[in-house]
Image 1 (cartoon, rainbow, N blue to C red):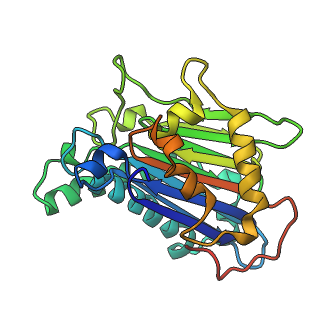
Image 2 (cartoon, rainbow, N blue to C red):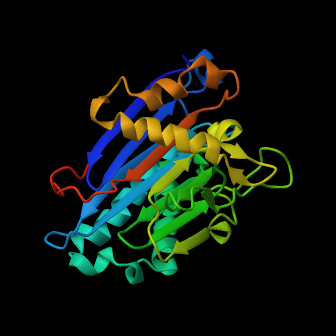
Length: 288
């Protein structure tokens, strides 16, 4: 196995959600915690039939002493910020439409994450740079999608079977040198924030940290491997009713020797597939 595996299968209509995190071999050998964190959940507008899927991944910097804590704080902050908008402010169904999710609002979420990381760094007697982390966000509604990122990772989507191809929502933010990227706590971190909007909702969504890149992403072409991703999704979708944590296929795949021989870094993958039918929404099954 490639380190410790944390699978995550979420029964959240109208989505099938598969997510798993595997600690990389290098960290596992040193008995260090993995530096990746993720969160994924759905929210529903009562009585309207509208829903939102939210997925976030964060990859702590390898050179930062407490980057795992920064990654955790970033994902936690995104959940708190979005749930504050959807639940505490009680905006109702209007918050489930595309026009509500402006670039300014999403930027606010990222800036709030930075402030929370700074506060958390003080609590653990560390510098903010010790909690350096990337942050990727996908927010998918019934007829729209928003993607946002600071740093590297993979943000992708698949529109429909007639298209048949995977598309990169936002290209990874890489620096001048190999392995270099931006972080939330970088001096220009929020200035490097990139946001992309779609006026339609994809059928499949992928949010991942860069550790899985050697398998899923062609860095030369800047493209996701459709011939790899489509069969993987099809296997997971076909076996949806049989998979229960912890023995699901995505987790086993990420922890396999086949993957470990190519990817030594932490691996975090969140995959979501919209049901082609419209199953009845159970509003009690929003969270993991």
